[in-house]
Image (spheres, rainbow, N blue to C red):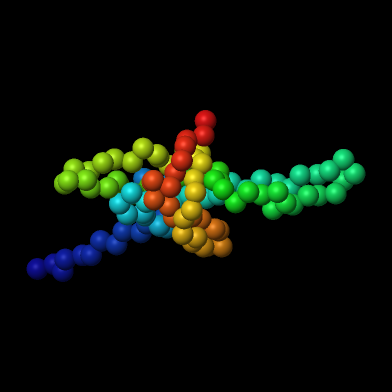
Length: 117
């Protein structure tokens, strides 16, 4: 009788997930992983670089959706998310995460104010 052979399946790190391009985090419920879009500092007429933080209002921020949870259950019915990976959004507060040296925000869908077109 022959010995059964074990199959080893190797998964390449280049394989893309359905959730996002390289996200190692999969949000649960109605949470969204967002990467804030940073503006470059402005340059004055005389060549002085003015940092973005000058005059910043700390209100809503722009970001790109990296990963999206499945949605939230309401009375036993799954309410799907209204944002998808790749959307540009205007969002408020969130929990800061650092993944592989990059900063992200984990926000509830309710903290997303608008889609930017």
